[in-house]
Length: 140
Image (tube, rainbow, N blue to C red):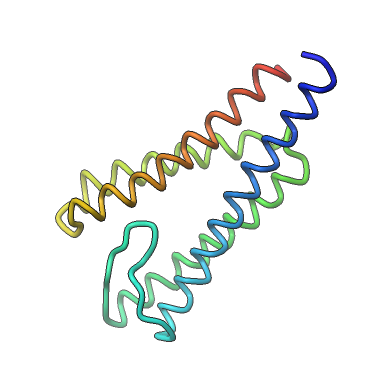
């Protein structure tokens, strides 16, 4: 591929990183708001509805990790070729989350929740893994 293909690939990688950073950042904010009792929403992307102080505490810790991952993905967007491996790690983690929803937590979710949550996660897996593998093909 020439110079144009290389520049296009950088745009694709940056876009994937930024989509992930925005998604994780928004979910982290939502989780913080739910954990503080400021909003009463189902937890995205699984649409789980929980309650109690234990749930709020765990959700606040999860929000910290989501915000940290949002910053990691943003950091990857600054040098997308060199840091593209973060996208693959993210895709693997999302795939593991899909499996855990089915294997461990399926009794907590309705079929609609499983389908919606898995669809969101699977689309991100495809975006991140696809961007990574395309970049490997273009840049080696």
